[in-house]
Length: 133
Image (cartoon, rainbow, N blue to C red; front, side):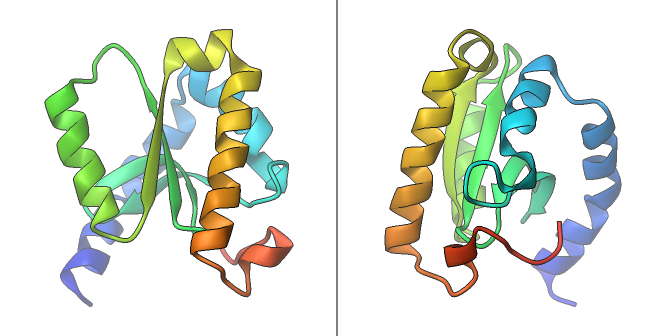
């Protein structure tokens, strides 16, 4: 088992806990992402490298992060770089943005899905479904 796989395995318990304790903004966003409603299948609280991303579309290598008041520019930049090092494109939204402009956030995610589909074509991406998760 490689270092990355081992780090992700260690984060499984953390990911489970985070799934049980979602923020209000994460709940709102998940209600729109679940079950392939965005024409792509997302999973929540998914380990990538040494981090747990809020939402991930594994087939398109797209990660969505919901940021609240506890976030800092330096920590988020380091976290984003670490996730991107594993081949994921990271998009971030503030919690208050998700709550007050849900339609705008969903439109931005739809645009990112289209970009990911054209830059990372995958046999699994076309059907909006992927294994696991």
